Amino acid sequence: MSTSLERYTDRFEQYADRYPCVVDVVLVLALMGCATLGSNLTLPGADPPDQDGTAIVLMGVSCLALLKYRTHPRTAVVVTAVCTVIAISLGYLLTPLLLGPVMAALYWLATLTDRKTTRVFGVTTMAALMVAAAISDSMDRVSLVLRTVGPFFWLLLPLAAGNMTRLRRAYLASVQARAEHAERTREEEARLRVTEERMRIARELHDVVAHHMALANAQAGTAAHLALSNPQQTKKILTDLTGTTSSALRELKATLGLLRQNDDPAAASLEPSPGLARLPELVSACASVGLTVTVTTAGEPRPLSPGVDLTAFRIVQEALTNVTKHAAADAAHVRIAYAGSRLLITVSNDGPGTTDTTDATDTTDATGTTDTTDTMGRTDAAEAVPSRGFGVMGMRERAHTIGGELRAGPRPEGGFEVTTALPLQPSAPQAAPHAAPETAPQAAVAATDVPAGGEES
Image: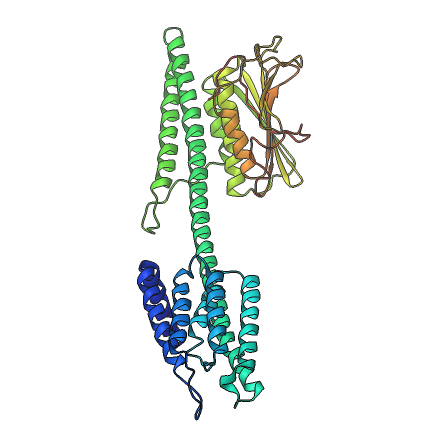
């Protein structure tokens, strides 16, 4: 029953919102008829008042005032209350039909205004009508209690109904607002997830393509240089070049296959994500282009989560890629240390020392501003040449994604050093990479070798 009533109420409100003038005129005419009929009612044995026309005029004025209830609800209540009090004072019997206009005005007042306004005007109107009923001659045969209690309850009814309608509308508005907020939140979260996924895919593709293409380019250049003087070495390098390009194709296929993968259990399984277990392959690939890489391990090796394992491998891979592309070095060193709950990785090379302001360190301060500082501690925007690639930025993003830290910079004795501290188990990133201040790590934070004026991969 309650559901049916609410359904009909909603339909009536929708129709009233669409055709407000029609609904208002119909209601006013109905109330006018009720008030006119109520003015003709008397108690048994009592004579009706002589002013029949006066009652019609008063009720007509009060009903016409109701046409302005949408814009002037207070005025409508005052006019209808005054007209009703005058009619009762003239001797007309106080009945619910005669109270129809003022009851409608009180209902709309409670619906359209706040609680304080409803309380003030409602109490004043009820008090005025109760006093008029108490002193009216038309109800001399009725006790004083009945003459005052009757109007009180009849006028209290529209106030309660209007207050319930106002609360119901406020509740529906809040529900709609929450639904719209939830929809906006879902859309924002979806956009954020899409953005994060795009960044992750971009980092992965960059690491795969940059590393293998850099190695392939170095191998091809070396082979061309040795083609006439050392055919045997050239043949070996070309064989390694074939392996490098094949590895690049496999990793690209795995990455693109992951993007196309659906939930079909019959779909072909993808190649496992690379980890530190593939460091020997990386060392061999670097050796084919003339870069000798030594790997040392400190502490007791412990199992890593897939995310940390992949991040550690990609950081080492990117650091060695930048060494092969930019550093004038023949050797690089990779140190892996297990210290407490952290995995510490240092990648360094023995390139020539930097003596001027064109060798710059890529650091990020707490405000997210990139600063270029030379090896003598000077900072000069005119002299320093910032790197334009995405290698350091990508490594820093990878480290921060799992709750780690990364730092890159030149070594005092020459060359560059990449240091990173990663948790053994991934955690939520503490801050965005561009917003977190870089702390000089005792345990190291990542970097790559980017020479003066060079461009990162």
